[in-house]
Image (cartoon, rainbow, N blue to C red; front, side, top):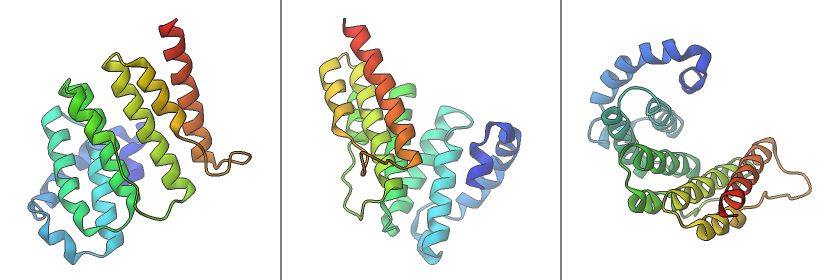
Length: 180
């Protein structure tokens, strides 16, 4: 379901599934009932909420992230935690114009085993944090954030890490060009 919601070619299917996702989530409104699901199912529900927060109006986006955050308390995997933090940072920056709370939500403490996939997600968080600093007109802090992240294996980064590295480099170039 997560792939269906994220693929732009299937955007209509994603929009059709939103009412079903909303109905399903009414059953898990308080987050307590999520613990009866398996860890994989909990992760799927949370990642579906993160992806569903890309659709619809700002109120739904905030609600989906709030529900995802409630469900995170039962998950030991750091990847969903990072995805929720990144999406929350973006929503706060874009819809709330609240740079300071966006900066707070984009800081994420990784306390789990680091994999190339998780490291790429941490790179995305570094990028989100840098963008937040750009919006706050603190360009030196943005450059510093971009330069803090590195691939796990610098000589042979994973595909996800290469994509993140590309975006970080593009943003660093934009900031340096803007700064003059």
